[in-house]
Image 1 (cartoon, rainbow, N blue to C red):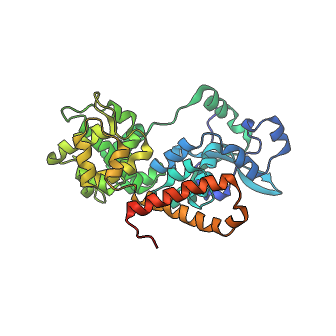
Image 2 (image 1 turned 120 degrees about the vertical axis):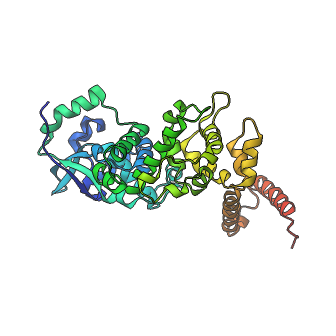
Length: 364
């Protein structure tokens, strides 16, 4: 295969145009040249969530740079993505979610509690090529033979190698791989913890490796950092990181491993990477910790309630119900003979009475 020339460049997300001739859009779509918004709407269902999670966890690595060429769209020369349309569509949907333009509960959950990563949208790596024909062979190899992206632990291992063997700092690695400094730092500390776990008696790390992203994501929480005693490993030179977990915290490391990854006898408490924020809330609570330690097979949902984590959710539910009811009062008199409305209103009145008694609210 002929090697493609071109260096990695960086551009703002809005400068990238999705390929109107993408074969996955279908032959008729290639002919009619769909507008950008319609292409994006069709691509929204192309399993973009995993890519979005990867971007939030590890950033957009330079080795994942999209391949672009300059073509005319809407009468002007545009930077058209030939290879990497799903990555660009995932970034666009992620940015729209942060902008409040996304209604999908799944996507809103993806960004919940995660600060908007500005560099992710302002510095997208790409390689400019001369024409589509220059990458035909590459596209065939990638999509027919199927090159697989590095898994999260492999990325972290590569970062650790650059730091430990190459004597590079976090910022040096960031520049080299096109990620962000905090992501590089958290990858290195997470991999250092994984390496340390391999030497701790009674710990099996196979499941930790399989779910490394859970370990990586959990370390963004101060509660997790404090529980493991690694908060002082952030913001320092990587040479000061190892060993990350001190000897007097090894028992808590074992607990942490059992709750997040299971131990062969009991399943993990955290079953999905989206649950790490709830887990952090439990770790920050004495009552939540006591429950985790006392029960043989604890439930994260129950632990979260015990820790008081659902208080804000309850407030939002009741607050939303109150506002909706207030809005309904403006027109409800017009439908006072509607049997369905009467039936549901009986339920509402009974529930409101139960709330009044539970909270000890005196009737007015």
